Length: 97
Image (cartoon, rainbow, N blue to C red; front, top):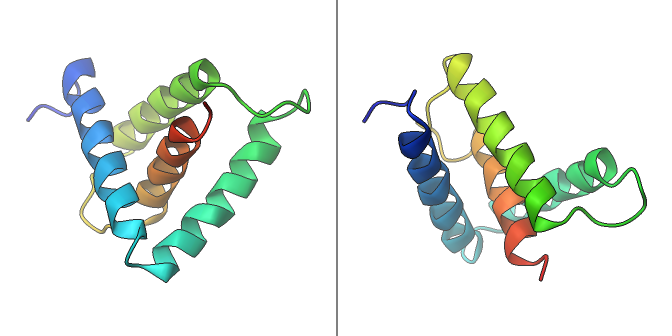
């Protein structure tokens, strides 16, 4: 898979998000880490006081993933910082409705 193409990156993020959300059910440690990232993201993105909406979250996720891949990150450890951050954004998107 070419990690530089937008399609590949979208699939990667989707797969990470789905895997992480499923793993959270049986991993209190991952759930706690995601919760901490969610709190940080709410503070970072919620400048207007309103919770970030799906479009804002998707824009953040796209930029975050692109930057991470450009820095040389690739998901090898399901509990690294980038993985948890992506799962947190996916969790927020799922619960934004």
